[in-house]
Structures are given as C-alpha cells and as structure tokens.
Length: 194
Image 1 (cartoon, one colour):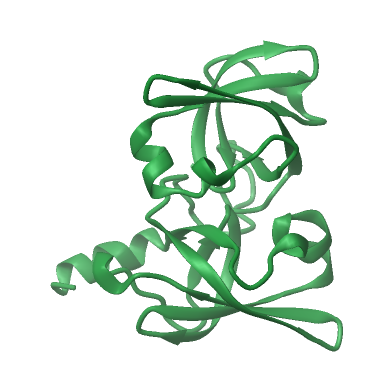
Image 2 (cartoon, rainbow, N blue to C red):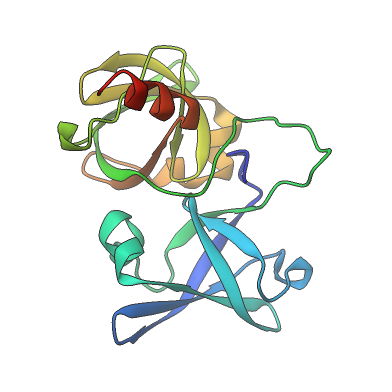
C-alpha cells in the first residue's frame, strides 16, 4: 500500500530487456535505505527491488506491466516518481494507493494559473473507469484531487511544491501517464454494473 505522496525522484540509469521482461536500474538518494524484496512505486507502479549496488537498485517489469503502464516508454536518464510502501501507524497524507495501475492516459492540456498549474488528461472509456469531482486519482503515483470530471477525461490542479518535486514539471501536451483510479470508487462502480 502507498499514499501517493512522492518521496523523491529516481533517474533511470540502465534498461535491460530479458525475454518479455525489462530490468530498470534506478539511481536515487534513498537507495541506501532500501532492501532486496521491498516494494517501491515507480510512477505509481509497484515493483520489487531485486538487486542493490551502491546508489542504484534494480526492479523488473513483466510484459503485462509494460503493456498497461508508461514504463515501456522510459529511456535512460528519464526521471520517475518514487515512493516506498507506507508504514502501519503513519499518517495517510494522500489516499489509499495500491500501486496497481489501471490504465494510461494522455495529457491534453497544461495551463498555468497565477502560481498553480492545471492539467487535463484523457483516457480510454473502454475499461469503464470513472472519476468524480473532488474524488481521488493517482497520476504517475501522485495522489491528487479531481477538479473537473467528464466521461473519459478529468483535470487536476497542481500546487508549486508538487510541480517542483514530482515529474509534473516535465508534463506537456502528449505526455503519457499512468492512472490508478480510487480503489473504493472501483468497487462501487463494479457493484453498480459499470
């Protein structure tokens, strides 16, 4: 379980394909605090640490993960949002995030508004995922509140801190992002037949 509150950014230093899997070597300022077999979210995708060397660690994504997320579009030197799993007893500052990406979306609009930023994302309606105004959404692992919600599109507002300390400062029209919809909303939608 995660909260959607990003701890740091990680730099992809190596990408190695191995049959249908891809191994990502990540460099972060928290590598020395990690351990093998630990779950870490990368752009909101929960992956297991399989190796640690100095200031880098390795995680592996299987074909299913690569097909459903934006991890397959990463290149060496790209930055990813990093969050370690939450500890029991800590404050839940974001919302309940599983690290299981539901689908990707494309950024269709970015606008600055007097010190904050508005981003609009469009996603395929085929998966029957929904957002609601003032509901929770996770974009590349960042816990956010939906500002405007339509059938297969929503907007979020970003404060300067989030803009500066996550990957949002590099988003532009056409950027592909990972989405994890609110887990409670997914269950309610399923019960309602969506």
